[in-house]
Amino acid sequence: MPTGDLPMVRILGIAGSPRQNGNTSLMLDEALKGARAAGATINKIVVCNRDINPCLACGDCAKTGECWQEDGMEKIYNLTLSSHGIILAAPIYFNSLNAQTKALIDRHQCIWARKYLLGEEVTDPAIRHARRGLFLSAAGADDPRAFDGALKVVDMFFDVLDIIYYERLLFFRMGEKGAVKNHPTALRDAYSAGEHLVLEISRSLGEVRETV
Image (cartoon, rainbow, N blue to C red; front, side, top):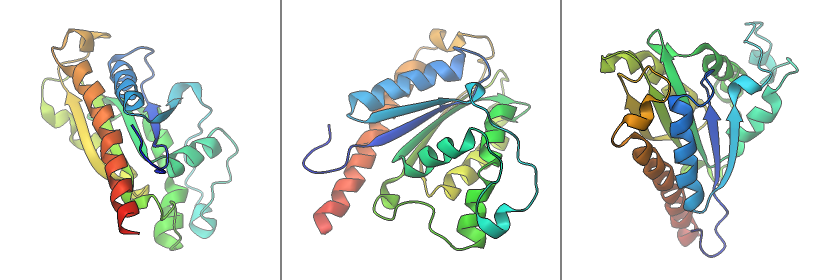
């Protein structure tokens, strides 16, 4: 649990799957339970329930650092930039992320432009050192290389958001809905990963507070 005057750890869960109560969604729910048990406050985004247009490659954000499209992304930007930790859960489609999750990530091009083209800070310097990420994924394929494409995308997404890659839980041979329930450790592992994510963030926040 948080101690002293350390800020409450804020965790954002992103459910990327278009399948309701699918394997990655179930893992995310367990991870968020673990995070909550460790003392975090939780926000959760179900991507398919949000109005998210695809990136139109107009190039305007390269000049302004802002996306002109008026949809559900503005609230999402506020959460992805202000949370201490992000737990992204998404399935593998054709050896990469599913389309809905990829659209959300693509729309962070304006944040990339703000950071790398315009040289602006995109996150709060006071918590930047403590930001962490967790990636949960499942694939129907029986080859662990099925995750390679998705990992490159998630690496870049977390880098743009000033997030240190904390942990990833990847499960293959898990194509059927609900298959994660039959895995001997997957849901328990997800719970522990969410709990440890918050403890790591709290530790990092505490270390800096002690040096001030």
